[in-house]
Amino acid sequence: MSLRSIRSSHLFLLCVASLLIFQPVSIARAQAFVGRPKLVVIIIIDQFRGDYLNRDRAEFKDRGFRLFMNEGAWFTDCYYDYANTKTAPGHATIGTGAYSDGHGIESNEWWDASRSDEAKVSSVQDERYQLVDIPASSIPANAPGARPDSAKFLIGASPLNLRASTLGDELRLATQGKAKVFGISLKDRAAILPVGQSANGAFWIDNASGQFTTSTYYMPHLPEWAHAFNTSGRIAEAEREAKAEGTTQFYNLVGRTPAANSYEFDFAKALINGEKLGQRGVTDLLTISLSANDIQGHRLGPDSDSEEAMIVALDRQFDQFFTWLDHNVGLNNVWLALTADHGVAPVPREAAKLGIDSAMVNLDKLYENLEKELNQRHSPGGHVQYLMPAPELPYIILNKHAFEKAHVGEQAAEEELAALLPDAVAAQNPSPMPASGTAEPSQQRLPPAPQVAGVYTRLQMENGPLPPTEWGRELAHSYADHGNWFVMLVLGAYQMEDVRSWGATTHFSPWSYDRHVPLAFYGQPFLPGEYHERVAPVDLATTIAAELGINFPSAAVGRVLTDALKPVHSQSQ
Ligand SMILES: [Zn+2]
Image 1: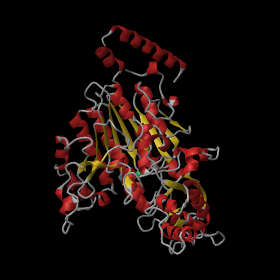
Image 2: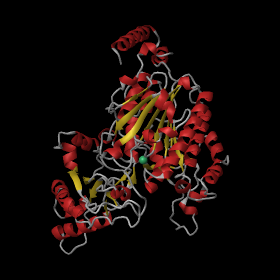
Image 3: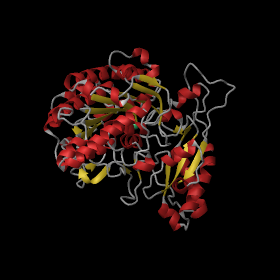
Image 4: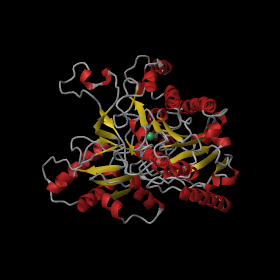
């Protein structure tokens, strides 16, 4: 913000302050928030790397991505400043302007000893609530041959693990609850985490039927407009578009196609109309997380023809949605922001063809060998489970009860595992090279070899010491505590767990391809241009909060991107 704009905003504050002195409290409160714009829409593309916009820009038309790239403020070099690039932490970061050490979400699911030793919990799972208006056929108790003790309802969800307020929370606080705040996605975590605790609602789909649902945390039943959407025939239309008529796997089969994005946009339109967003004399906020790119991207990778087709289709879908917004709310009255929750690695097989050391690590075998070694050391001849199963990298969770039984404390246990990991990973055979393909690796180059770039214990992450470098800062930002002992494992660049059984590539690491995402703004306060300054997704919530004149979210560490803001006096009212 320029000096002049700071002065003019100070003048404005002085005027407001003098009004406050003489007005009754209720009137003063109504005047304290200027109510501009009518609607803020934050669009999050699930798994979308920052380089895609450059790569495919020749294909873009009209007011799709070009609305941001040509008429908005487009930051080409936006990188997450943490090392756990997963969906739940990414969405929480966008909403809160904080990292895992601030918002408390470090993974999609984790072991939480205070809740269960039997199963992991998801980042938003909350047994105190139930899912709303789920079709009977999607409830386990109704499945053919279901056990008599099968659940008669489905466990609900909430932002219970989110430890920081969001941009939406601050907008609700600033307007005494008058602003409405909603989140939409195919995935529960991606609908809930960007909008936070005070949101009016978050909507996601029942994976089997594709019907939108929510949790009793927000409301006992779907609003009439949402019920009407679910029964409108729109599901069948999406299934036809995706060539998956009558499927009972809507999330997998429709969710991985462009049809899922237009399905979400149509639900967003129904929500904006149904809740009269942007039509009530106050600023409302909607976040839309588009899941299709992630569901497809894991299977086919970032460089496939299908990825390009998805992006080009999304460009057209943006054009349609923004045109609809223009007709119904007026783009003059709307601020838009675009970003993603994480990037993705190239398919290892494809990178290996170019000679890149992109090995895969078989986690089952790695765990088997580690357990063998730990048993030999602490319970010779036994079969004690020293590691909690179902790992989700980058974290490896220790079974603290087993170590405690062996009289090994947290520091010793974590340090022992950290010391074992480099050799255990390196001992894995290099991944077999592709059997077919046009570009075989050069005979002079070594085959990919699994390797560890770093292992960090929980105690080290909580209390230091970490390297006094950017790398160390990224690690510190990745820390959240759910009562477990753990180590954080960083594999070599372009390396990952063996994903061949369920897909082709993934994202989870501190390497640049996982952290690079787009960041762009469109609307009255933003100075159009292409900006190459290094920025981060935490800057989204703080920049919008600053322009709205409201508080930053409670744990926000983002900056205000002043280069991309018009001076306050030149913004049209
Ligand atoms: Zn994601």
